[in-house]
Amino acid sequence: PYVNWIVYIQRKEKDDKLSDQRDTDTVLNLSKYSVTTGLQLDWDDWITLDVNARWMGPQKVQNWNYMSADYGKTMDKESFVLVGARLTVRPLENLKASAYVENLGDKRYSYVEGYPMPGRTFGFDLEYRF
Image 1 (cartoon, rainbow, N blue to C red):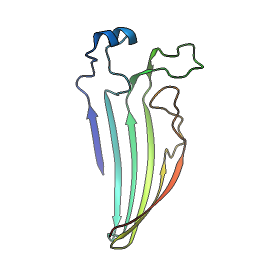
Image 2 (image 1 turned 180 degrees about the vertical axis):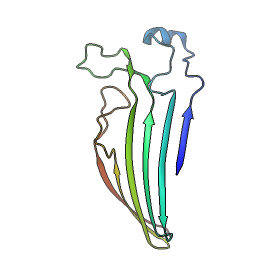
Image 3 (image 1 turned 135 degrees about the vertical axis):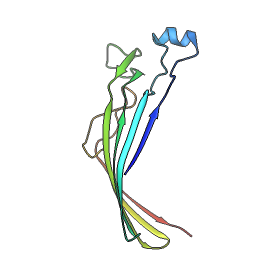
């Protein structure tokens, strides 16, 4: 198991003019805290399963949704959780193949308002080291 916890002690904008324009002195698009946790299981050094969850705390963002009446204004963004998994196989010393799924719950989310992130995504990686 693993946990990565990030906490920003200070997120204050130093530019007073910019703070006045945005109606906040909080740095935009930056959560005060975030947590990533997961479980990595290894079998015989050639198969690895990693299941993880990432929680992003609430943050202040600028609304870039041009269809919104609040376009360009600063708004509060709610926290969200994303879950993912990756299965990696190493059949040879220099060869590694992975299949993964991101946003397992198919959650609708965005880091910046007006720019939605993809839903459930599947992928495959193949790596060979010379």
